[in-house]
Image (cartoon, rainbow, N blue to C red; front, side):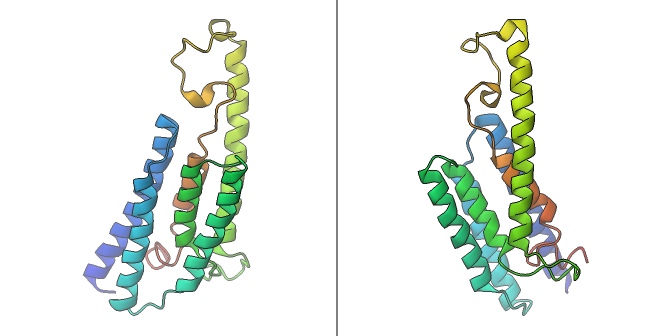
Length: 192
């Protein structure tokens, strides 16, 4: 791999991780994931995949990646319809699933899972841990004297208030950063 391709690959890897972390921070800070982050993740995928195809000669499994995004988007839209997920989470999860694809993890021959399965499993585990932590934290806050029944005039973040949505974007973004080193279109070639 020549120097230009290597710099570009590290740049794409860094930008992917930065966008995922930005989504997590926005979800914690504002309880919203900007559409621009999901759009940039999708656009970055296509720029990277086209570069790999035409410059490096890498055979990108287009149907695998697009199929993974479409499958996650359809399931996410059903979950959104029944108020199980919010729109920003569905869009972010679909955009990151585009990067994972249905491809098998070839970097670790002992593993039989696919990248998408690994990613979604980590999202579920992180989401469960986040939910449990916030439930405990909310219960602790309820027991403190300054907050007993007086949530209207507090300056607590929304996700610490009772009956508020969870910032699930954190549980979507952090596993993506963790798995980024293994994904073939991101860190798979860089960190062998």
